[in-house]
Image 1 (cartoon, rainbow, N blue to C red):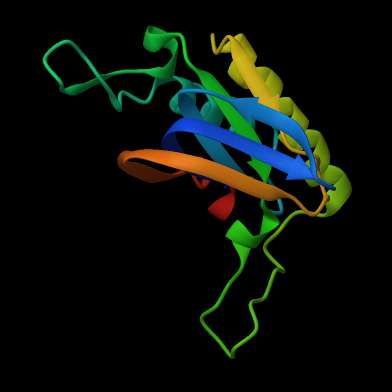
Image 2 (cartoon, rainbow, N blue to C red):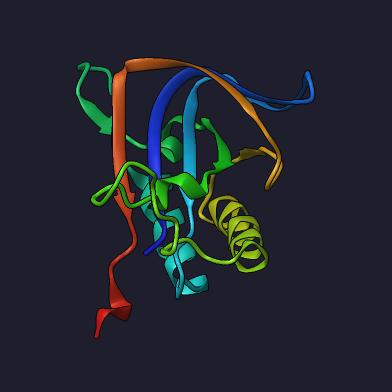
Length: 153
């Protein structure tokens, strides 16, 4: 399953080699991990879920509006370490993470799927780069979202 950590932010940016490569004001910072066996259907499902999560305040200060409802942006950063298994030993195992060429394609596909779902501005980090991510978490609101485990038989 594609795994995402979704943080509601007032601002977020990502730098590579000291230069800003992606930046948003209010919206979501999405840390995205792609697992072995994930496919485009997983990415579309997750993009629609993220785009429509109702965690932004309405006029009564209830978490009742989505990214799309508010016309906000998303900054998507690839993060294979979300697939790290720390149950044994002291060093995480990343055997569940997809191969880089597959993960890169699905990461790009997810970003396009977010746009197709109605998110007007989708910014990105650089896949496989060492990135410095800055954010101001709003709330804080942080959620873990995973596509359904359709591949488990």
